[in-house]
Length: 344
Image (cartoon, rainbow, N blue to C red):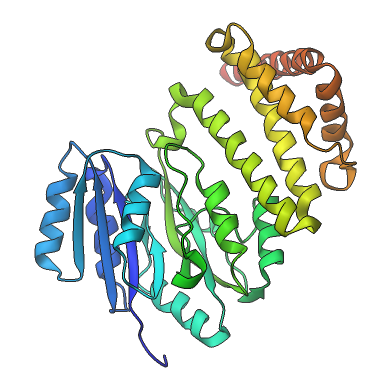
């Protein structure tokens, strides 16, 4: 490697004592040594703050910021304000990274001149053995900002919205902060940052381990409505940005926004109707859907989804009724299948 610039790794910490030591151990064990590790204790009431302080006493590269709880976005913003590195990375405190992750991403940045390096991720389920075929593995590839944004908006490809499987040049982050008080903040922050980059390099190795656990913030069922509305807000603001800066991607971005409005409307109608007794939330979802441009979306959506969107535009309750029938049929099939298994 030509040189070893300082890399700041930001780790928001909240109620993760069970996972924190493994996470921090994977960061301090990186083969790339010139690190500034910023732990932002976001008002944890478990043993997490003490674990952070212990690691700080053992490694001079670590600094710990203790603060009242302000949420994930606020913690990341505090970490960004404290970071002094020329390159920035994020690790969630219940995940862990391979020892070569920062080395591999930095090498890719220096060798290609890209502004953002992205690695593959390995999806882990708590209490289950790692399944290798869930990992992203492919050759290294260089993308323009527009190409990378398209992959990100399409979802499910090599480049996704998460902030933690990437290494950023500080210049592309500039003054872009995470929207505070929101869930799904990555849906807005990541495209804004990606749009600043001249090039993005994908490193085809699964170097980040993402832990899926039921009690994490993104999986709390009692936050279902808030999650959905925050997601719609982030997608609406993303659409406004894409429309202004990358108009060639407006049609695809509109599709994702409209699909999300449909899904949230149906979900509330079928499962959380009592939480929207006056229908105000659903009315707003339908209004925002109808205000977005009615593109012909067959090339992205296929006939079934396009028909569903047309039905939602003119008769949302009919669409809900169709979903309700399909859900009952699915439950009946599942019940019959389980009964047949027990009797066989």
